[in-house]
Length: 98
Image (cartoon, rainbow, N blue to C red; front, side):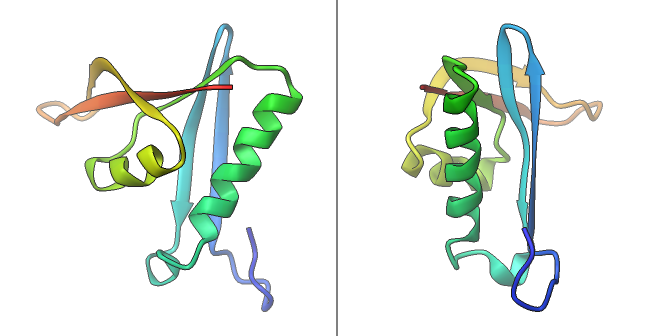
């Protein structure tokens, strides 16, 4: 997502790993966090998923982002996956049924 000056302020990536669809990345530049950019980007991804008739969208949020995804309607699935970084934390798997 670009702002009015064409500066990159956000980006998203979706990984469609049939039958699982993952919101693989949703990043907002730090100085723009809290201005609704992440919400608009997430809403776009949810609409895109619905248009493609996907039934569920998953995300592995960084712990500080978990509250954001809960506010967006995602639920903690109870699943945990290890970090790709050796010795890293476990991440919660959140999902949104579409």
